[in-house]
Image (cartoon, rainbow, N blue to C red):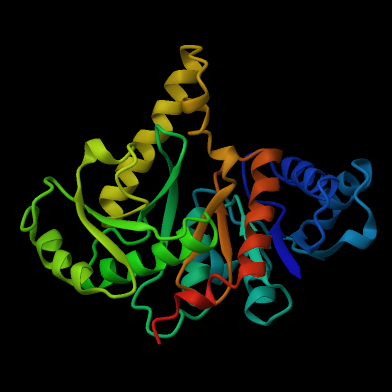
Amino acid sequence: MKIGIDMMGGDFAPLEAVKGIQQYLAGGGAAHLVLTGNEDLVRPLLEKHGIPASAYTLVHAPQVIDMHEHPTRALKEKQQSSIAIGFHLLATGKTDAFLSAGNTGAMLVGSLYALRPLEGVLRPTISTIIPKENGSTGLLLDVGLNSDCKPEQLNQFARMGSVYARTILGIEKPRVALLNIGEEEGKGNLLAQATYPLLKANEHIHFIGNVEGRDVLLDKADVMVCDGFTGNIILKLAESLYEITRQKHIDHEYFERFNFENYGGTPVLGISHPVVIGHGISRGTAFHNMITLAQKMIYTGVMQQMSMG
């Protein structure tokens, strides 16, 4: 098993990526790590932190795609960047997964164009973990990859999210719901009204109907489906809740579960290989958890289970 890591992505690269690798190996991580980045900057840090040479392969990438560069143009013009080389290694079978805390747009563009969607998948999607107030965990998707969606796409998101919840989160029979402005069938905008009957007829999921915004943090459903515009607003709102608790020194175990570091990163669902996108301010713990998530996705073969064929 080989996991590719962009060592130059993120505000604290490459130091925090090295710290994440150190944590992963200290915890018994067995995957071989294929690192893409500037060798002059990365290798001294690996040696300083005692990362054994047998645990990794370092592939020199002299270019970096900065956070605010145009994703498509940057990938085209910077083919020797750590992200572009990382995707090339993944697409050619030299790695089994790829993760980065770098330019999110470049990671999404790379996922869509360097890799192929799974059979029958109309559009890949990204999801986020939702901490429930009773201690359980839910999944919300899409959260920003597809701002405008068609009913058929939401129907597929529900199926992919159900597979992910069952395989990665360990939820035996995930309850799938449509995020809406009312619980009754027939509620919502045109997208929600057209999606509901598709979800109801979908034999691959356990559909329980609509849930409202007030239900998102409650244990009403395990997988909640919406368009990426709505989902991204909810995601950013949840992030702000965590920031407010830190600023006001509110110490509570529930709000600590909103810390993105606990989950590492966001997986892209519906493509041929695992890709995990981290937050730009990821530190060592987040990188450790991204590597662990990628490893679990490889072990379980979760991506292949999402094929619509």
